Length: 208
Image (cartoon, rainbow, N blue to C red; front, side, top):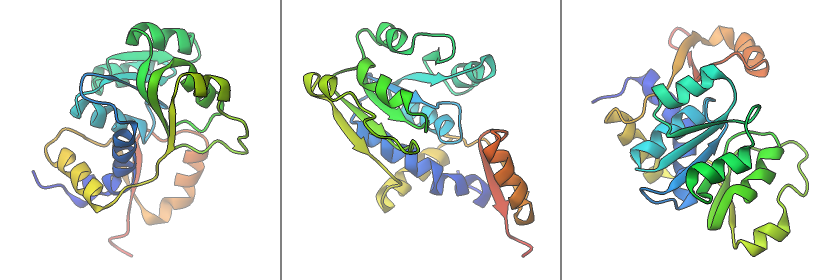
């Protein structure tokens, strides 16, 4: 299937970013990946890529609407509501002892601390989000005892992009997006700051 420019555009940024991040976790097919910030613009793509790669997905976010989207629409195996659930205990329970890998897409600092607690020994935590002014984010004692790997990840190379686009072309991944004129960009930024955007915004520059 050929991708339209609007369909492909989010893959060139958000798509390849989470796809590369998932590869960096080294989680294999059949193992558990926990995605924090799972219902956001990056997260909703990460769930789809993870499922297409054969991973069992634990989605962490909050709200019944996001639970429905993550599980019923995107195929996550479990949903953990960080406002209602004990995140660490719940992830350990549904994964049978801890997640093999974690993809951190939320800029809040607490998920970074929790990730070490619910990742199983020898697991990998990959950071894409950037908490503002974060210092001492990870509990070093547990990090050492559990022999965990912490990695940062940003974007990917041409091969990663080719693979990410291929998943989309085979309809394994579909971005939720809305097309708006480039002149609406001030409103887009305002909506981003207030959390009103679902999925991604594609800015159309065709007439400019």
